Length: 305
Image 1 (cartoon, rainbow, N blue to C red):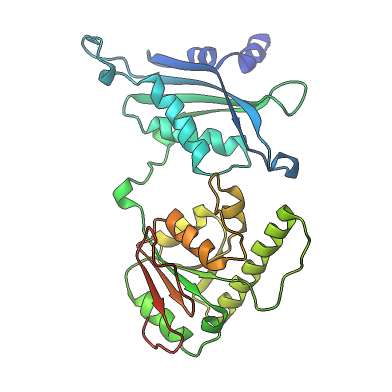
Image 2: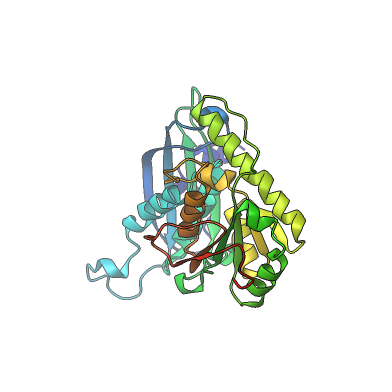
């Protein structure tokens, strides 16, 4: 038991050695400290903290001479790049989520067989608070290749468009095309409460948009309100029409929208860019002329979209 306890707190390299059932080479990253915003508690939002990574990757031994060729081995850079990529993709609440994503990204490398990921928060208490996971290639879900990622059509509906008698017809036309569909809406016409405090006002304005998302869902049963990237990705692959509830994705974004949530057209444009949409359509509103994605404005009186 004493040895098991010691191993539980030992560096992942010792854990890897103790649990090996076949001879594998290992590369390791020790005490890699990054300062980042992470955490589920309100006190952890809007501030950064230090987190430490200790990672061991087990790789199959090379056959033949190495020949001092970096392309034949799993570079240490691949490990640090996996960390940087996942930290930059989205703000996360849980170390467990971050560890899982880092492990999966490392295991996409062809040489990697098994990976130990230990992540610890260094500033949340008198000691280090953390999580360690072990993942092998056999249990990791392969990530989508870039050319397999769905690119949706994002449609922004003004309040007048939501109440239009043409709404059902527009949805019929869009649903008939074999393209993932996500609706965005603005805030209700009635004004949201004003707090005079930037952070709380931002949340209230985002929640006002989400109220309107549920209004749209009530207008057509095909529309489902969705608030996470995971749900959106599933919906796009399974033909579900979504209405975007923005709070979680906006608040968790590492590089969030520069405009206020009250500028709901700009928010929809930011979302379309994040989702790598093939087109953004605005019904009853006017989109900016210069954007990074194709756009189209549809007048309220138009029966075709």
